Image 1 (cartoon, helix red, strand yellow):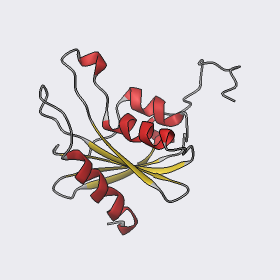
Image 2 (spheres, one colour):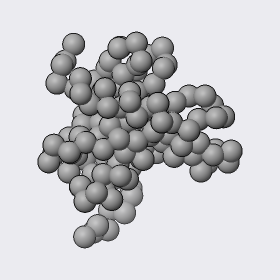
Image 3 (spheres, helix red, strand yellow):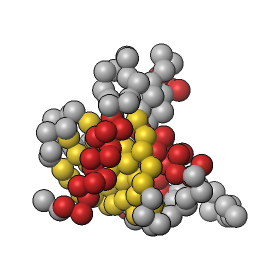
Length: 136
């Protein structure tokens, strides 16, 4: 198993314990590593209007951006699922805004892991979307 992500996974697991998931009971934690070496964490926050629920990945990325970070290298996402999870479609698009080649480390509370790349999970994230928009 690739040990380079051990600390990131541990931080995501710790963040998972802070999840607010009274409806689904599916707690998720995330930890995003920045190019600077800083790590920001997040946990899912549910709402009885499910469309307003915020995924752990977006909470972690939002904290990082609010902290002045824009360059990300990896994100760990943890849950108590049978297999390691991957970010949902909305999160994939959100993450691709900052790094379409982001490393995704899915991990379970039992220690199972799967490492993937965002570019494999979401190929061509800008196709047909704001082709001429300049984010600067």
